[in-house]
Image (cartoon, rainbow, N blue to C red; front, top):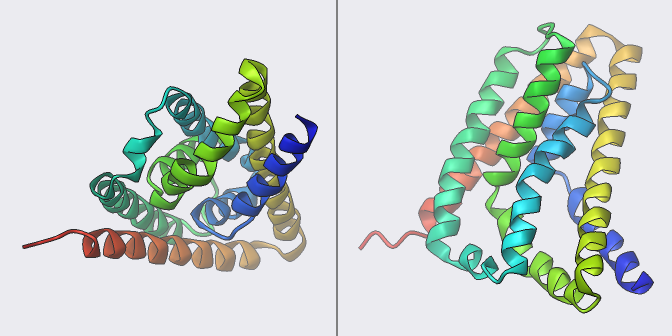
Length: 204
């Protein structure tokens, strides 16, 4: 089982460390609160746990249906674009720590549930890992889930922590510029998700 868990960590890190919407919002929130990465990871986990359970019981094939992926892409793309606009408009604004932590959890939920690539990963790579973990019984499935989420937690915490340190060192201008960049990045990803989802639909 040790070899399988090591492989899980490597595969999980390769996924979570790839630049994307989750990284952008973690950096943006992390500049104001060093613990924001933990909150984003919790929101991410809220979506991942039910997915893992569904795959365990054989429902993962639903996520491979193109119509389902297109629907998620459109809804998720709109949510990401809206979040990007909100970040750009509020760049440099002071937000209370409690409110920020709540919004970080919610951002983790939305950016995970609304990301078609996240669902495709779980429908393919994630599913194969879950199936392999079943070979080690329920303990194997639980350890797989814990190892995978811990990779998310550590990376997102590190991103938020580094963003917070950078904002403390470089000041308000750094926060505003980074917020603008991350907001625009989310906006672009959102439009791309919607465009790709619409392009997969047969209009005839």
